[in-house]
Image (cartoon, rainbow, N blue to C red; front, top):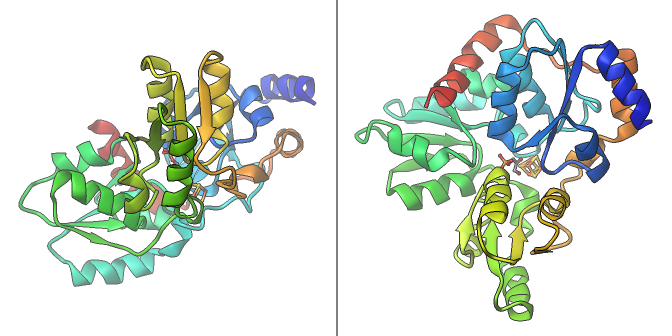
Length: 297
Ligand code: 13P
Ligand code: SF4
């Protein structure tokens, strides 16, 4: 199957990109594996004609926002993000009426419709710097992740209005998981994703995006790390750092949507050139403004 994917990939002039939470075998056949920011940068730059996006819908949509002339394949169209789906463009328009003075910042885990209604987009790796770069006199309306939003508010001291979305996978990582692992491995450092609750964040040594965790594991001297995020990232952490030990905060932190992409579906998508993700042109142009503003920072 891997040989067939490699052959078809060449024939179709395709590139395969994968998020850090993808299944190990899917990460292993990808040309590039990364976090949301790295993947959106990659999508903005690639000269491939076809992008096979191994991730969830909003990520493929971001690739389509940058590449109207390219074919963006999402091997399973059902791979969505429940947090992104907590808010529609119409919901955001109503919310903006409540806070007309606020700058609207959307997490990249949002639909193209929501990006089109936002001033600027952010990811978990640049949210703090991005909010700090905004006019200090303006309040911020942040959608859809209330936990990433409240974390950013606590670090920056800014007034941020929050939409009540959250990631069910990260919320299921509870303080007792971290405390139990810390008791078993007292010398370990704790890394958590900012989608975790404030109670979990309070127990962490570092709050990092998935790309930030990869970098920390590579560059720090620490040999033992407790990882508070989706367990798919452990494959890459272990592969890149064979002499270090990584302990999942919770073995149950599995995003079922990320796991919908399989090698079989990657192969089928290259064979049939379906399912495709497209964004209507008027929406694409508006959504791209918010992502371009982020990438310009
Ligand atoms: P990253 O941007 O840190 O890769 O996070 C994406 C995501 O979906 C987290 O749940
Ligand atoms: Fe969405 Fe959470 Fe899955 Fe990330 S881990 S894609 S935020 S549901």
